[in-house]
Length: 617
Ligand code: GLC
Ligand code: MG
Image: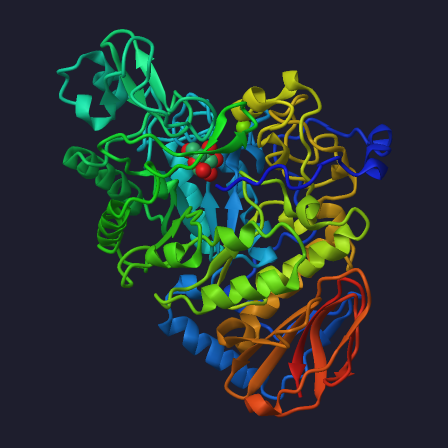
């Protein structure tokens, strides 16, 4: 979370709105997604090639002296290592990815139809945000049945088919495990609220008020106002960290553990490869209900600012994580656990790894929340996670379904596409497990609703206009130039297709060798085939440079240098690597944007916002 939503005034690019009138309207009633020119079902071997295309689009062979040897080593390391150590995870917001039945809402069959695209892109796993039955107050994060599929997304048979088809495309499937709360429409909560003596009463957190009309304490919901809602029938308050329609489960009750372990078993048996665990830091609250301390000022909802001191990060969270790990580890295939872990610092984050017995990939929200192109800050944070005391694998990202998209957050309004390519390198060149968000590979923009009447996300309704909600980063995936960007045949998709879809879409970008999409594809391919990028160590260099963030990836005799000019001015950097045991005087680009040739290591010229991934020779 840590949704730093007001970091940038998110006025959308005006040039693009001029295109609205010029939209080609060709929704010729197709019910199946348009096949894309590059949608070929590749064999796994086909992607392990030492070919890459330059920025001008020509195929060119890398200068690797020993490409066959390198391929053999890549194959050997793939056979022994846990898959998630070398994976790139791609987050799909199912509602917005691909509609297959023309109701304006994305669905499971739609995702299955796009597996060819995802394989061709070069990702390894998809994380699906919730598709379980839900009243949809928080768009799926309020679940009323953990072991079923919401009919809006399809059937369980559709889901099983997605998993089996994904396997054929070498794509693993990660589910969302929303553990902190259920929907108030879940059968458990309905029972719980039915009487004070119901056997499920203690599955949720019920307390008496302080007095008439007074909640038990001052705890606030992350989504605004009191975290307590009064229930007339039984005369008590229930606790909810998020909306009132999302009552918190009581993780101090062993029956809740047993029921939720059963949910994990259910999906593991259906062949999923792991879980992303939602809002995990919020599982426990102070049993003595101390008031949270106030901070100066007011938030977007008009509430006094508060520090969530007594509702976050209780040590018991780690017992639950160990339990979840024990359950999934009973299944083969190295299942992975990822946590939404917006921890205040790397020490707290590192605790999520446990002793190798909790989660393998806690998401690094520190990196996600930098929100400015700052070489010193990225250097500091990548160093921190690299050196985490748990020796855990870094997991980092820049965009997700809760945050304005990175194209707007990091763009300067002028060089946004170039900056998007730099961010692609920042995502895909370090060591760790990167996570992408659908449409990031196109440079999709945040497109907020213009009027409060159009807002879907309740936090946008409550916080308007200071908080416009999260609709802006959840707009339909932009596939082509047809009326609804190939997302749906419906006249009205659940969220409007942004005007930028005319230019920013898979079809157009596939044809443009210099597109953001092709930058991602080249980098994703390189990450698979280049041993240093795939397996190599990470070492920051030139640590005093305020503008150029640079680091080495080293494996055996191969050294790759990554240099990112995070400023709008041309910069020259000199790299002296002999002291680190690196031989070589020349930097030969494996990837560069804008395209550049080989340079002397002691005089590397970087255009504004340039990114180079080069072999030291
Ligand atoms: C997580 C989800 C967010 C949701 C919240 C409550 O932060 O990412 O979308 O609103 O949990 O479930
Ligand atoms: Mg649909």
